[in-house]
Image 1 (cartoon, rainbow, N blue to C red):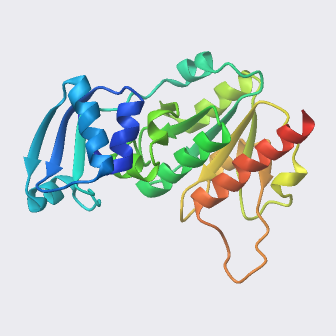
Image 2 (image 1 turned 90 degrees about the horizontal axis):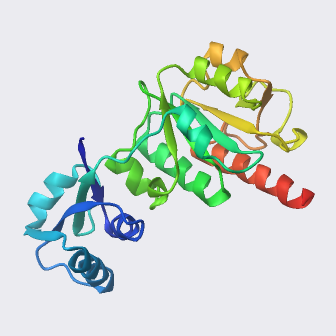
Length: 245
């Protein structure tokens, strides 16, 4: 199994708190602080080896990410099949997010964070032309990547068909839509489809949606960042379901 890097103080703490199998800690020489001491305490308890590097070498390990003086390594995070995702979901009316071509790892991480915060049951991504559970996505998720189930599929269209067969309704986001999210009743098993940063949903995926919604843009810009759109939609579902209780 491939090894991944967990970069930055908060993601490393989140990984320890989630009891993930950390292999090794890499510290920048001279780095100190309360958070670092907490991480070292975790490492000592779990018998995780620690290596000290100069900041130049640590930055080379981190690539473009801000390492904040620490990197942890572990085996890649697991991804599920869509069947396994459905089997492990316990809510009677679950909500999934399906990402059609979201390629920016920071957007993916932010979507995972919003999904975890709003109680979404899982995120579905394609194997190709998609951001993955990379160090950048993990860092941007602020730890949510360690808790949010992620399923990977070879074909999104077939995944949608499978979800429809299992009584899910498919709600796509599209700027040409005629209704807003608050005009849709989300009291149903729901899949929120989010398109790519530049082009939105592909035509076939759009055609498979039961509903299309858009966020009204009242200012000068034409659209919102996909992660921001995701958060608004997720919390609209929370709002509706909370009010109906």
